[in-house]
Image 1 (cartoon, rainbow, N blue to C red):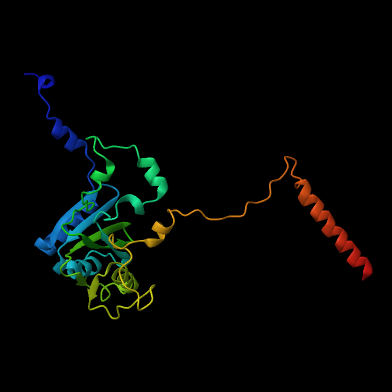
Image 2: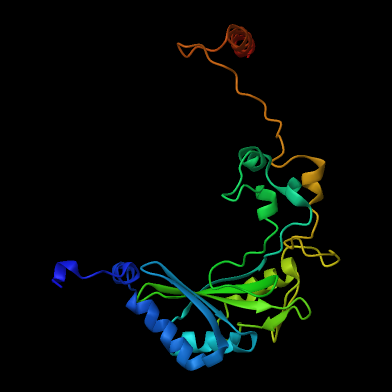
Length: 257
């Protein structure tokens, strides 16, 4: 059989054509070698970014290794997320979004509201309703890693990163305040935005946003319209007359003085 008659494997062709990101793949390999089973899942978008999900007991170890061994000395941010679909349905969504999606269906022909009942935990996966994620960067090589960790509902806590990245201090306070996730060994978890007697965690999906029920979101804001101008740029007649009266009053007052 000639070389031109040799059958080709489509999957091999696609794999050969897929871009390879050696720098980020090397980071995954080094993290895997150090954390072992503590690295649960990773996702590399070649030429773009890297996400790594680690076990809760490896959360601090991942931060330490990233800073001291991998050179990711810059702390970018830390926050939380609640993947649970809203128990209030779509009434908390912006009205403009509801209008745009009113007639849309997915490829299976089901309503989008039905599709939204499925929990999706983003790249690198997840097994819990709540997750904490943090971003660190190697500013020398222009690389970043977004770490994720599952936080079980039965024990909403994870170790603090403040001892490794001091900049995580206020970020962890905000996450504790908004999601109710405790950061053990944090030097001082206390309210950052809300008053001390505030009850609940506003960024949880099951926290009712009563303001949106009182007035559709985004609410209609009463704004006084600017006076319309004539095509030649002159003020409307009524405004011109008022301005003339004011000028006349000003001239009279000046003459009296």
